[in-house]
Length: 386
Image (tube, rainbow, N blue to C red; front, top):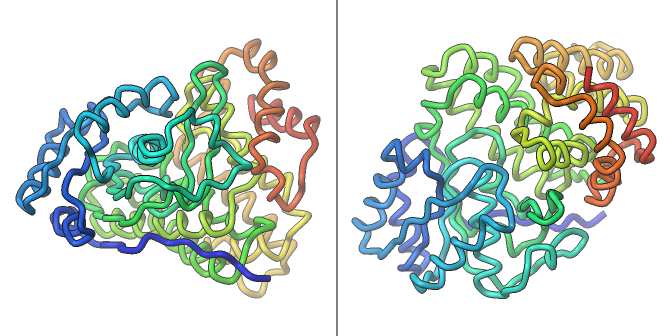
């Protein structure tokens, strides 16, 4: 099998790396970046500090802070206007997955025009697009290193998966100092998101030796450090480890794929406005239990990397231990069920057929060790609700 691999051209990793952002952008020959972020990071002063580093490098940035959680096609309109008014030659995504996904979408639409639904999977988007530089502030989405963006269609409430090298950041600046103020809930949700990326990349039907190494390294690191970061947000070593693991997991799934958890997660986020990492966490144990019998060796490798099984355990025993470990992790990190989160049971039941249809249409379930039917997806939604 020949694997096609795509990675950012430049990756700066380490505490304090954000101070190098201006030099990174300037070294790429760019001068007029649009800094895409959210109101929260403006309110903390972080966006202005980053803008100052760009100005010190002799650049001419403009700030756009109108991104929203789980970006929508409607939310991109003001960003496109800012992009064109500024005459931007590049886009910097600064924040969690939502600002980075918004930046990627703006970079493509700013050059090619049209609507995001024109670029949804299974289309592979190769460009052209403006260069994207990604600066994550959460240890989870891995979007700083992926050729993926997810945008919700405002007209249909469908989270559209958009793929291709056009969305791959040209550079990523990965600074764990930017995650030190993350609250426990966000730490948990983004951390489980990263773990889901790593495990799904490894068990995916599109896995390859390159993605395998990154995925297992990320699983090991997350197993050692996620609970620590959740319990003590000031644990700098745990924060730094989680930041690196999230980037590794992003590289892994971008060069392999995600699978059934993500396929089922996106509709939950679109219809019920549940944060992406949290909806993954709600699904992760049950979907893994559904899937392990089809690839026990792959799941067993993940269990051993996570520290949930010993090298001497059989593959079947280790794979079963992974399911138990995921349940324990979600318990320890206070992951609610959809019911406990406050989602109305009638709305959940009514939308389940549509969510199953949207999950299948995204293509991600086809990468799962067990390729599910719509009926099986509906059954899984019913199982996780309680």
